[in-house]
Amino acid sequence: MSNGYDIKKIFGSALKNLRESKNLTQEQLAEFLELQSYQTINRIENGKSFTTVSLFEKMCKFFDVSPAYFFSESFYFSDKEQINYMQQIKHLLPLLSKERLKDIYSIAKTFTK
Image (tube, rainbow, N blue to C red; front, side):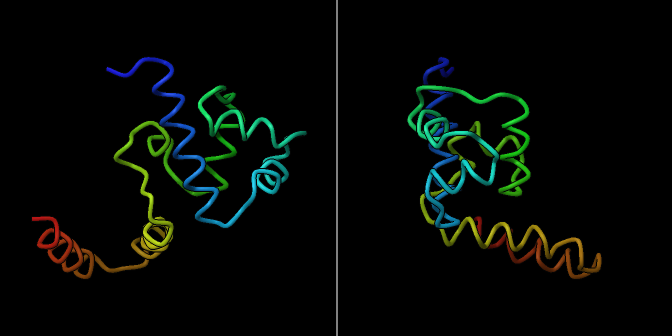
């Protein structure tokens, strides 16, 4: 079980990966999230601070990720391109027919074996 410090570090790493995947500086992200200072982002990314519920909600919407993404090391990746692919796939899946979804599921399942 992770302690509070570990959760802050995991959350901060996930935020940093997402920010960097969009090629944003801490200052730019702070502006998009309507924060007064980039230092809030800096403290969160370094595991020194946590977020408010309203800021957390803005982060999830801005990056188009599930809240769970921020709390599990298995949900974030060091490869920026991989994050972008996952976000694009998430937007494309609802457009597919049931048969195509079955095909994609079968293909994806063979790659995970």
